[in-house]
Amino acid sequence: MSSLIETQPLDAAVPTCGDWDLAALATHVGWVYRWAAVALRTAAMPERGAVSRPDSPDELHDWFTTSATDALDALRSVDPSAPTWHPFQPPQLAGFWLRRLTHETTIHLLDAQLTCSMTPDIEAEMASDGIDEYLTVALPRVLSGEGVTVPTTTLHIHCTDVDGEWLIVPSDDGLVITREHAKGDAALRGPAAAMFAGLWGRQGAAGEIDIAGDADVAASWLAIGGN
Image 1 (cartoon, rainbow, N blue to C red):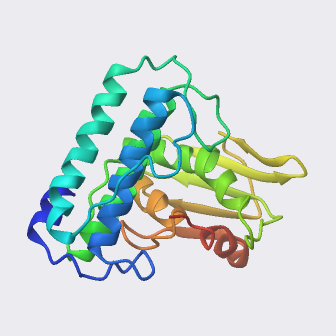
Image 2 (cartoon, rainbow, N blue to C red):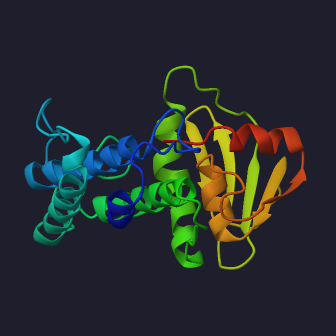
């Protein structure tokens, strides 16, 4: 993403992220990097104002590069089994952040590539793990937000180019997600990259998804997306 910030118009609209332009997208990702680095080093929720933003577009590239370096340094310096803080459900261990930042980077690099009329290229194994991370980490938090409708139907997801199958069953205690071949009210089938992009609300960005069963059920799950 750093090279795109340096070479592409910063005011280019990002078609997959509402009213963001490329500068806003890069600022978001860089801010997440810095925020995660603070959480890694302190094992606490970063205090308000602990993370800076660039003062002007002219500073964005250097600020973003420093943000990425800071996150990498924090990931390398903190033991994965050490305690951390994050706003998600899994155990509060520092190793969580490597996976979270990897997929945060992947989905927003896709956004940046689409902005710059480039074809996204997500490796299938990476995408399959990204699907699992979306379902087990990001989705429960997205569904806990205000005004979000939680589907009551079941969904099966099946990657066609790499190992990866999941069944999502809503319950009173939240989502029950199992990694199995099973029948749901609807099923999504397709390449892992297409599935990863589609679940994050970027349908069609990395290939097409085939829908079996109730199309309205499938649409309700795909409509959830995320930032």
